[in-house]
Image 1 (tube, one colour):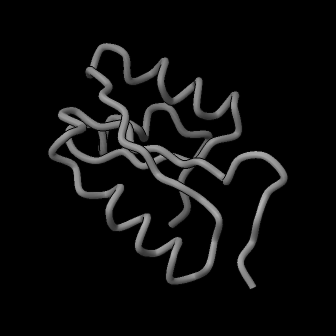
Image 2 (cartoon, helix red, strand yellow; image 1 turned 60 degrees about the horizontal axis):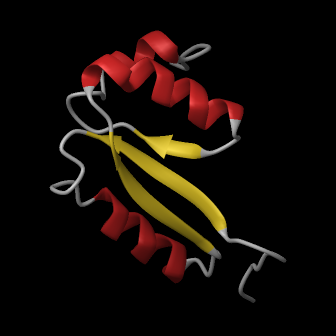
Length: 84
């Protein structure tokens, strides 16, 4: 059964630089369709200087996000913690 929402599907985003060259959105969309999850993933162009603010905004809004290079390692500074 396809999970649906009454208004908008669940949204996740990629905090990327450059966003246009990041293929994560394509992979996420395929995974959502395969698992019948009503969701969409969008790439957002985020410069390194704005990355901390972008992480805070996604957290405040309860959105999931991915952080490809060059942000992949910087994101650790903005997390509550890490698992082993």
